[in-house]
Amino acid sequence: MKTQQTKNIKHFCFDLDGTLVDSNKTIYEATSATLKTLNIKFDVDEKDYVHLIGKHFVDIFDALNIAVPDFDLFINIYKKKYFDFMMYSNLYPEVEYALAEIKKRNVKISLLTTKLQEQADKIIEHFNLANYFDLVMGRREGIAHKPSAEPLLIICNDLNFDVKNTVMIGDTELDIQCGKNAGANTCAVLYGYRTKELLEIEQPDFMVSKIIELIDIC
Image 1 (cartoon, rainbow, N blue to C red):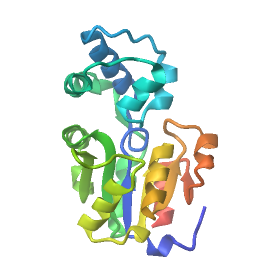
Image 2 (cartoon, helix red, strand yellow):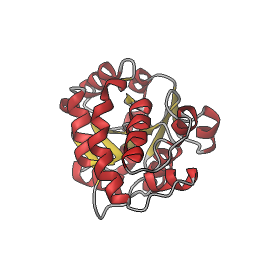
Image 3 (cartoon, rainbow, N blue to C red):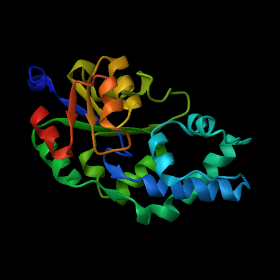
Image 4 (cartoon, one colour):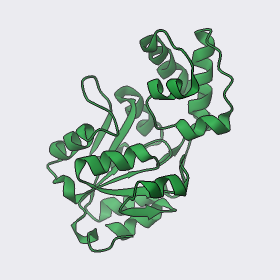
């Protein structure tokens, strides 16, 4: 873990699924229910599906060889089905405590997720976390998604922070690549949906096994 940069960190940008919220079963069940509604076969094991979470659905279905003729229709149904399965989602341990401690250190907090903006806002509200975030960015029309640098650069611009004083925090290769593409510091969390070995390939600046360890980076 790097230490020389920590005094310059003024902004933490978090991924959502696999980083703040353990939502794999919600995502799996909502995907299954949506495809069933569309009469599309879905016989993927949940343990296999979890390793794809974080990718855009187009890429997930390509990887699984699942043909979804009307992707917009899938998304419209999925975003409604998702909240039917919210009982399966939980915050990871100490998430709220960690966010509160980070705020005490005058570090800005943002969220960057591939979920639709409306979904992201509702999930943050569901877990009563809205007060901790200075900006929440879900997927928006006309803006590229991770691993593109574009959404993170927009966040930094809106918060008036140099991206070099930012840490992009997430559990997948897409989060680390996004941060690196933007010129930010990067932090991989090891409790999410990717293995340590896969994340090490991306060479993040920091790696943490518990979210509370982020306080040491402030």
